[in-house]
Amino acid sequence: MSRDSGNWAKPTGRLGAVDRAGALNANVAGRRINAANGGFGRLFQKTFSVRLEGASVTPQEVIQTWKTRFGEFWPKGQRMFLPASGIAPGEIGLINGSIPGTPTMATGVLVIYADDESFSFMSPEGHPFAGPLTFSAAADGGTTVVQVQELTRASDPFWELAMMTPVIGERMQNDIWRQTLRSLAAHFGVDAAVESKIVCVDKRRQWRNAKNIWQNAGIRSGLSAPLRLLRRR
Amino acid sequence: MAETPTSTMQARQADATVGVVEIRGEITAASEKPLMQAYAEACGEETRAVVLDFSGLEYMNSGGIGLLVTLLVRANRQKQKLLATGLNEHYRQIFELTRLDEAIAIFGDVDAAVAAAHG
Image 1 (tube, one colour):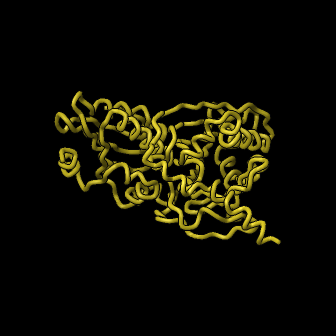
Image 2: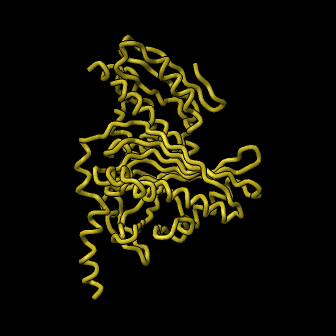
Image 3: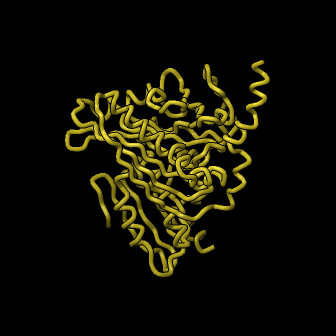
């Protein structure tokens, strides 16, 4: 048995149904995980990091806190519903995201990997991004450095266009991780700037995957919003 | 040969059109330099495919998967195929989980992968 056996989720085929109290639960059950190769837009490697200068905390302690309180560090308007036990391989998180003036978008993530110093998500079809997203912490000269790194494409033409739109693209993706890292650093008593490194790894768009738009979680959430309103009445 | 304290990458050319990279030890984000170096060594001017031999793989984390995705993009850009061999059941499952198996064809041994690369 490999050393990493317990760190990986088992292959799922299609994601199962989960119940998370208070969550708008849609666009997850029955969906397959989407890899970067199955996405549409340009492929970016984005790295966001913050140094916890002066904080007496180990990488393992940071990751333990992050695993159990992940949603608390997300910016206002973005919600992640995880099991009470927190992040573990194979667990599904439900995401309810919103931009002011738009309906709540329901999607999710699968925890594909978790160990003491890192954990990783992949997202289901319809999620804005396709590809792995890794959260990690490491010691660097006595200081714990916390990092979010993604290797993702926009999953369909709609999301690619959104990413290219000034302000919206930044807000939808990059600002989430900058604010998350600032909140996490603040939790450990550190007020530090978040460093960003964004590299376009592949500038080609994968037009064969343009059809992914049929599963777009934002469009589907928007179309179902009137029905949800009617049901509430 | 390219090495880190935790991994060894051995490159060779099976023939003029197929290269082989033998991966031993760990694949993590820290393996980027030796893996890319070995990949370059495995490629000649006429290389159309590179076989990644994972039979010596002992450990891989999610950073390693990211590295393989990056390598796949590089291979595609050079119009080369990536093939995999030597994966045990555990690592086959990880390829399936991350859907790398849809982009990197998996074979039982290096000879079968080299033969498929010619097909």
